[in-house]
Length: 245
Image (cartoon, one colour):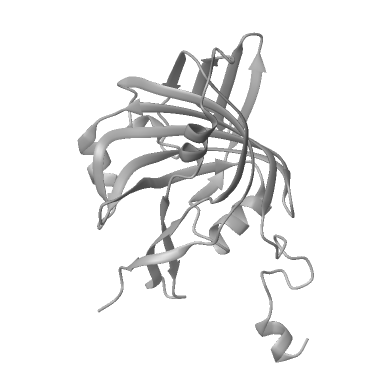
């Protein structure tokens, strides 16, 4: 392999790339979202400047992705926090727990998604939408919602999916000092909402040192949705460089 080929490597290993060099298209991507109020002081300790916490709202999400170009079939779960950046509303993506190594690698390297290993699931149990997240052998989250109790306006569901998403991109030097440390932003714009429903919902979080979802306790569930879409992810763009100057 000559130097020019090395410079064009998308990811490693050189003979078995960790993920496909493609733009990811999701077919029948299924969301189960629960919005809840939590402790505002804890949120302020977690949300990085220059983002600001607008109100103490968290979105717990489970996403079932059965058909993804280049990545196949996987599921992920996580927490997002309602924020603003220079008057622009969005969500800070705190953590994502994923059952696919290629999805973890591509999400972290190619973009800035805060992914780590976990075992989420999303399914219908009789008359109930159920989302769970296990970390190792332990359950750390259980979410439930009544199945298709009320239809949600598709434009409202689309706005929910198209919320601006802020994340931290962090890459160290070989000595451990920061090499890249940026606040980045992305937003889904190419999306077709196929169905959207809501219903009564509950969320239970369990304390765990390495999957600390319960550090943002559920004080009040304020909304829930179950949405099926086709969509394409957009690249991220930097909005703040923590190392500048």
